[in-house]
Image 1 (cartoon, rainbow, N blue to C red):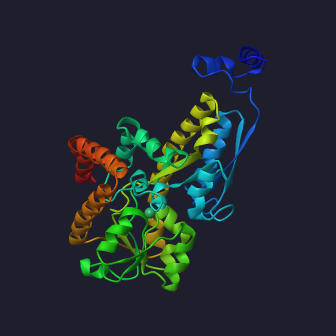
Image 2 (cartoon, helix red, strand yellow; image 1 turned 135 degrees about the horizontal axis):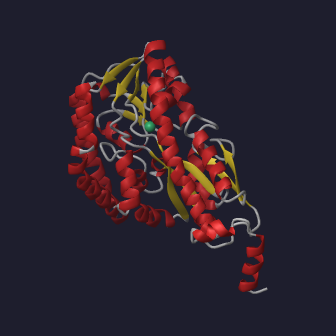
Image 3 (spheres, protein in one colour; image 1 turned 120 degrees about the vertical axis):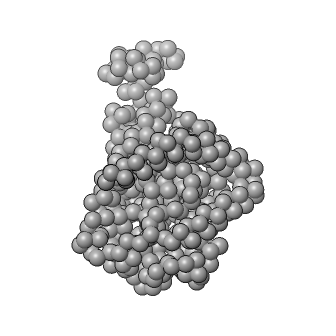
Length: 364
Ligand code: CA
């Protein structure tokens, strides 16, 4: 049977044909056999916002494809370990993964730029870079080398500085401090004297409680409360300079993605975009409530990092990034794009988001 005949046959069956046709998608949506995918994640199963975000992504893809793509979501350790997601999707053990790109710095340093850059862009700006500043194209270039395709799929917004068993009064307090911090932020505090540990979320509480680490960052009030980190340390520092955004990723085995019709590919892409909007709203709403619970109910002490620490961390971040970028052309290309976009946004941010925040703080 020729291509034309197939298409006519499908059109008869396609209940979605008219709507899909007006959107300009190929009219094949209901016509193909069911596709069953596995999604492995770096998060504990059903963990608030992160794990539930992965579940919602799977459900949205199923809804947008009218059940043609069904995705079974696996929590960290169920099919592969949390930090085994990249390899599992690359090899096709699972077709899809949900995590944060800085977990893969061992694969390529540049991955970290697609998750969080210390003192870098915030969620709004990162989104702008991805969609209107060439970020997605660069990400495609980087990941295609690994047989992967990635989309942003969630964002935590600005994070908290973390939980500390002893106060940070000056830079010297980082000497010998054992802290969990992934990505570029981890490298920054390592250069400030800390011993850095990378642990997946599920292992943080025990490590902090037992004293295996002295401090940890995780996400923010909503997620940190869920892990009970306030039961292991009482001092909670801000701001999360190391993660002014944490853009989350949906990674897809490139071959599996390319096997999809353009309509299905678009459905996957749009479901990922919806994840970002949904998750940012969830964090904004829930962090505010959880912060009150931590402070009022659990007696958590909020502290701001001293300016001297923030200044040194900022300076160190710049040298870490330039150094990493100078090591290979791909990282350099990505960092250059990131940096020039951030710079371009600066004057506008000053009189828009930042300017407004300052103005609002005068009246509240
Ligand atoms: Ca974090």
